[in-house]
Length: 361
Image (cartoon, rainbow, N blue to C red):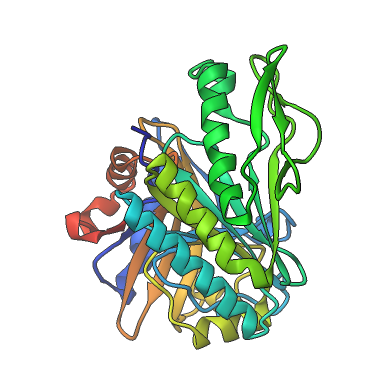
């Protein structure tokens, strides 16, 4: 069984606003004196780091957030990646994937200039992605260009050939492509697409052993053929009895992002942001104790790296309301539940959290 990827999000209990800066000061001292490998990568109140073009706000929440605490001079492009909950049954994964396809079409019809791609993470099977054309007039399904399982030698050429044969049959059948198959030639898979191919190899062979897969299988379909794409994706999930989670990656200009966020309902998920942005001066002044006027809403604070057991990248953001603040922590997929708990203990944030505070993984 494939290892379930974690994307942990923790939201603390409320802390009085007038004591929140003392909490942050204590946290900074503990990080600075850490002997266990936790370091601060970015703090968004550090002007020297904020002028670096590589400085980006990266964090995850269970709903899209407003970007009102970022200055107007910030980058205009918002990249958002939504990770669904893990779907433990093929039927659940199928519903999640088809709901996502429907959402993407509805977003496009509202003319928000959103660029989308849909990916899948989960069971051991040929990876597949579903991508929209930039003019939103067609679909492209594709396999990954590099299969890690082959490089590790954890699967044989024969078993991988069988998996790819099943894949192209699942994808091609709704389009009438029935005579395609793979042949092992000198340690490589040679794809025979058959007549009138819909699924094809973008160039050459698929490599095995020490050779990476430099090419991929691709399938194109026009908008009018969307029902056939849907049938192909359902056949793919059923053929491999897949479990996993659906990932949507989108990019959208900031002005359109705010309209999109306010217009649509958004299902609970891990909404991970990648946004090169500067905090407003008013937010910085409060976090630097130069002002007593607290901001409202989400304010990014810092990104950390933890080298401990199950460690990885962890972001910390603050969520201000009228009289309290909550700490949002999100970990990359390298951060296990144990790794997040270790970070909470090391930074003393554990006193503001309990089991009820873990709201997504």
